[in-house]
Image (cartoon, rainbow, N blue to C red; front, side):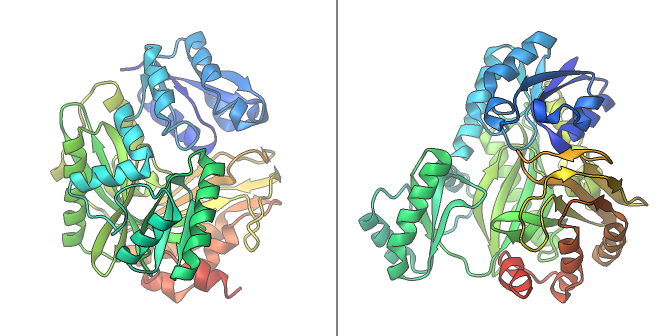
Length: 447
């Protein structure tokens, strides 16, 4: 087992990794920017190293500074957390080149799944169902026009190196295709330095369902059920729940087996999430995230399995501590992502938190990086807390979550707490009948 892990991240995920390390009796090192001098993960780690100014490019994305810090403190492993460098294959290679273990999958899988076109080709070879679309990148408008005619409108143009909804444009008709194609290429170039795009059929009212898989170096690969992630705004998840209210146990076992078999055939190591669109009883591959997910706590809640602990153990060369037949779905869990944003305009609201109160009670879990007196910096993602609630069933879980949202206090900055309350009060949420366009096209449009 590792003796010291450097956590190359910040916020609630850095704290989540820190807690898992403590349970495994592993010493922790926090790296941080000057803006995070007073961050909770810095205060609780065994050691801390400042690696740069507030800008992410000069701190949390600064590979030389992170490697230098790891060598300085004698860390034998680096956990990349979520975002930042967590899916950067070059970073993983550099870490390993310095005889430090990268707590994540093999670099070949990070590279493969990081390129959306290559990921689709790989998924098809592995027997994962795909959305009908182009086999490779589309080099010019003439090719785009031919592909769109074959696929059938509406179509979705997507960046090959995309993520977070950037470089993604819809063309409902032929007349909309050329401006959408040009816009997607330009946005992809600006966001990722890579203007390659591909085209898929645009599904009208799908749900977003993802399957959590995990594998060790001994060939043991399992799935831990699915997460429902359809409540989104601008392709960013707002609320997630597990299991999905849209599928039954037979369907769950079917798609879970497809995902775990594919991961096993790849020889996948560690945590991974295979994401799908689901419409009219069919699953279509979107992408595979080769890292820990923000919404992993709801899977932990319904399975009782500590995913970060398993992730660290696997990176240390140990086998999975459970088998597929040991995975049991117990009850229901929902996560609310609480952002420091205006709940109507979604404008970020950094600033000092003068009052913070965490809800409590059976089945209530809060993953937060804030406290009374903490100043939310303006330089990073606006996620400041995750509220996770577990219940005996979905109705019980929603009831508990409503109470927890009444108890949580984060003031005086604006947060999205009120938005979560509004969502839970809708009949659509009560029935679980939403799709990926419901929040933006119906609930938010009505405000």
